Structures are given as C-alpha cells and as structure tokens.
Image (cartoon, rainbow over all chains, first blue to last red; front, side, top):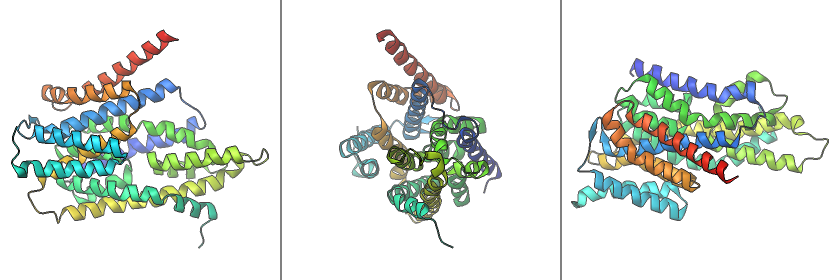
Length: 109
Length: 244
C-alpha cells in the first residue's frame, strides 16, 4: 500500500468525522436556514455532475473523443432508465452493459 | 450478551439499507480495483470515510496522484450535508454521553440518517406529554446503533468483496468498469434531483467540467463546479426575494 495514499485516506476520514461530530457538540437541535441547506445541496450536485463528466470523458489530462459518443449515449440511457423506473441501480447496470457492448458491436459515429 | 429491544428493532429496520449497500459497496470495490487502488486502501477508506459519493469522487484523484488538498476540499464539500443531518439527529439522543455520541456520529450517512430520523419524528408525535423525547434518548440511540452499525459493517465488507470479485473479471471489460463510477453517480443524482434550478446546475456543471479540467487539470473542474453551484443558488435566491 502507498503510504501517501493511506495518509490522504485517513485525512479524508478525519475531515468527514469532524463534519459529523461537530454538530453533536455545538449545534445539537439547531436547524439551519433553508437557504443554507439548499446551497449545500446545490454545491454537492454541481460537484457530483462535474465528477461524472470528467470521469466519463477524460483519461488524465486527455479528452477521449473517440469513446465519448458511446459513453454519452450509455449515460443518457442509464439516466432515463433510472428516472422512469425509480431504480438507480437498474439504470447503472443497463448503462454499464451498453457502455461495454457498443464498442464491441463496432458502432461508430 | 443480549441486545436491547430498540437495538434489535434498528437491526430489523436496516435490512433495506443493507440491500442497497451491498450493491453500491460492491460497485465501489470494483471501481477501486479498476483505478488501481490496493484492497487495504479501499477497505480503509470505507471504514474511515463511510460516505459513498465522497469515496467514489476520491478514486480518480487518488489514483492519478492529484493534490491532497483538492481531495480534502472535495470530501469536505460533498460531505458537508452531514453537518445538517448530525445536528438534526442530536436532540433525539438526550442523556447519552457526549463521548459515545461523538464516536457513533461516524455512523451517520444519508441512509442511516433518513430512516432513524423519520422513525424518531413519528415516535415523538405519538408520545404522551409526560414521556418526552429526551427521556427516550437511550432507546433512540440503541435503535440508531442497531441500524447504523450493521449497515456500516455491510458497507465495509461489501467493498472488500467487490474488490475481490473485480480481480476475477477478465480483461476486455475496461469500458464497462470505467462507466461504473459516473453511471452510479448519474443514476443516484437522477433519483435525488428536485426542481429546475438543481437540474440547470447539474447540466451546466456537467458541460463545464471537461473544458475546466482541460484548462487546469487539478483545479479547473472544481472551480467551475463551485462557481456554477454558487451562482445558480444566488440567482435562485435573488429571484425568490424579488417575488416575495
């Protein structure tokens, strides 16, 4: 195991623990303004969708243009299935199968 | 050794969470393997972080050696939601030692928050005046512990099993493995999204992330996401104030 990675993982654990533990000491029973809660939600939405995009289309600093259409289609189908059925896991499984099989089928754009 | 009745009730209530966790933790283990992390590293991450979105988000930056500060910042921002959840749960644990509460707060996740919170709220609305929430603090805490501790165990073990399973996937499945992480995030996000503003923020961040990352590999996408989230929220607040 890489010691630098272990240190980062433990740091992530500490950061997360502090977020969870601090309210038990200082904010017990306190409700936050609705606008603040919404802001936190929007920030996490923005971060997560950015992570989706960069993980899907980039390999390190390089844009994977040839694979991008397959992956974008698989993502669109996954999202539609998850949205229609209300089952995120089903959407992910179908999207993954599609992402895997489209290149095998030799579909080109 | 016998477990209290609230603890057992919590364990029973956790079964749907276990089912969800088995599949998600399994996926995390597979994705961690695809990114070249060691088994011990991903299991340690599951045990010390116990937060799926932040863990998934950390895989690529960890694998590619991105700055630690960036990983901590993303972890902090994604997990900031726990602040609200932890504060909301705390009053239901009256008369439980603070040190115990501090340690057990590690078990708060989105799933292990929602079920107990709804349970406690329903219970408090049914309680007689004399039997105040505070007096039920220990029972509530045992219920939470039964639910959260078992879910946590499923999460950690599931990650390891998923990683082990990925070792047996033959080569040629790289595209599918690469899709797992963004696919998981996108489908979870779809289930959670409410309102046009949220949808616009998601779409804008999705589109801006790649150009942002190409401009600056380490920080570009992160700055773009923070800017879009903040501006989107600010515009919505401004419109809402104008209409009041």
